[in-house]
Image 1 (spheres, rainbow, N blue to C red):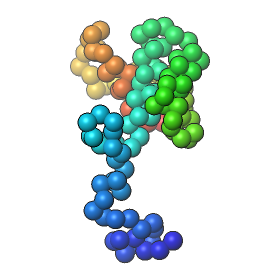
Image 2 (tube, rainbow, N blue to C red; image 1 turned 120 degrees about the vertical axis):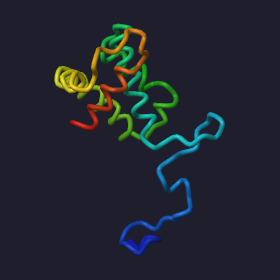
Image 3 (cartoon, rainbow, N blue to C red; image 1 turned 90 degrees about the horizontal axis):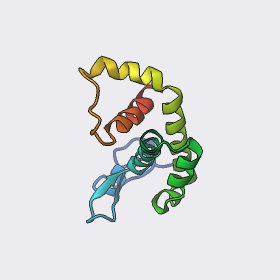
Length: 127
C-alpha cells in the first residue's frame, strides 16, 4: 500500500475524480447515485411490501432480492439488505419509541414510504 494523494497511508486515489467520492453514475439521465443508496432503497421496498401489502418477510425479501437491480449487487450488499430489514423488524418497538420523541404527531396515512425510510435510517444509525 502506497501513499495516497494527500500524503497519508492508504490506497492511492485521484482527488479530482468524482468516482472516488463513492458515487456511481445512474442509468437515469447520468445523475450520480450515492454509494449504498440502492441497498437502502431495496430495504425500504421490502418493508413497504411487508407493512403495506401484508407480504410475509421471506416472500418480500425473495421478490426484492431477485429484481435485476438488486440481483446484480455484490453478495455483501444483498446481505446488508437482509440485515437492515431483519434488524428493523426485530427492533421496531424501540425505533417507534425513538420516533415518538422527534415527531409532534404521527405520520399521515398518505405519507408514502416515509415511515419505512425512517425505520431503515434509524436502524442503521442506532443498531
